[in-house]
Image 1 (cartoon, helix red, strand yellow):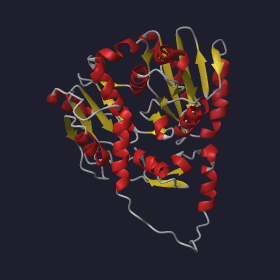
Image 2 (cartoon, rainbow, N blue to C red):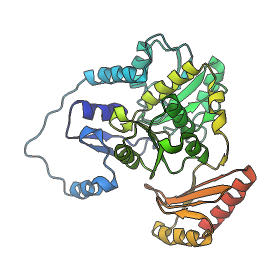
Image 3 (tube, rainbow, N blue to C red):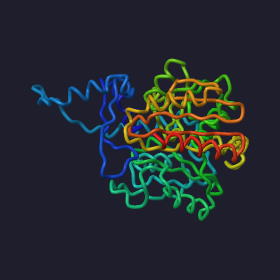
Image 4 (cartoon, helix red, strand yellow):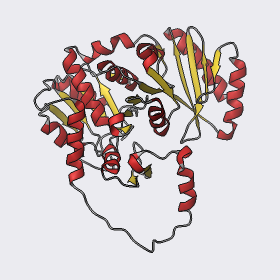
Length: 365
């Protein structure tokens, strides 16, 4: 998908369609649709209009032509190298790489070979049935083989991609998963600049980035739009999407991986040490609460707003309530009949206590 975004921009196309179900299981499929420049079309940018138009399919009178531009991949690889700041032979660290039988190996193999990076490949064979792990690296157990590979190969870090290679997951030299929000903080630390993050990010990251940061609603179209409006150079989501101004405000997991590898190499510290200062609070991760009737979500959020009226509240995306020692956000999913909950607190006990209470309240509806 990042190669697709790059190609739409590079060829000055009027728009683009990527056939992909992203990180979903093999029985799913779908389209990612962009405007000129590779800018994603979301619900607020006309996607629902396209849905209506597609109901009445009419065969075109004047048909276009299909061409296969093999040079675009090479141009994208050269773009990644130029914008990563890495020269061939610079990287001395060993990297374990899991492309999950998805599309990532299409660019990672020639990219890492050209940069002479020592890497241990895992699941590089492209297979849409995804025989070895879920195409979603956030799925339980999806990173187990990568963690094992890092230890076996004595690698300095491990990276994994989702099915269409626009999301990045990272494990450190000890085989421990590093949350995407910590990775965004390191990318920012490598080059402090304006940065956009979704509102689910830990309080620790918001404090670390300070006035350089701007929060966004959840969803890649929202992050990209906020980056353009705030003139930010970097953006990220807790899901592992990383956005760059040089990518015309779209994602590139490969560029994020290269910039991270460059920073770890330059710091001369293990990744686990670099993220240690960010691990200040106790973060629940996103919890999905199934809704029998998602239309009730407005009423549910209103009830929560009243119940937690003694906290500092805002309705930027769902409901966020902040207290001195803990905070939470609850919002309807953009894609599924779910409410999504995040809870973070200064202590594990406080986080677990409030998480339990909020789940009980939400489940009662």
